[in-house]
Length: 119
View 1: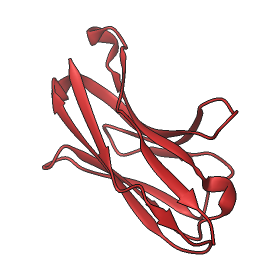
View 2 (view 1 turned 180 degrees about the vertical axis):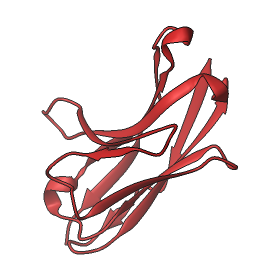
View 3 (view 1 turned 120 degrees about the vertical axis):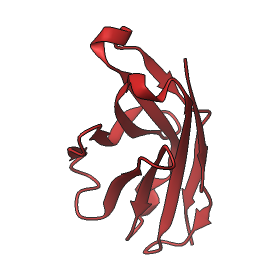
View 4 (view 1 turned 90 degrees about the vertical axis):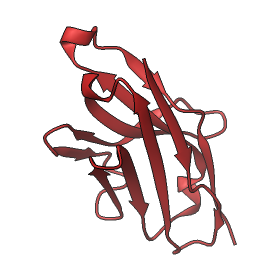
């Protein structure tokens, strides 16, 4: 089992910045990849950024150059630095953990943190 706890969501003006944090606990060694997803009202959940245990990152086209995902293995925490925020970035942001195949490739989700970009 993996538990994920997000924090950092807030109301921010367009052009502003936020940093989201996701603290993982439980079976940390089973995790292969972690990532951030978001879901806006009336839309499906979409992948924003992912990072593997080896540090390889991937981003949605809509956030490339503005968002940066990183991880602190000592703190078992993944971050999402969001710069140049736009109103269309408004959504609930969810942290996700994908376990290794040997652990069943299971997905775990946090409870979500709200980001609102508005003037």
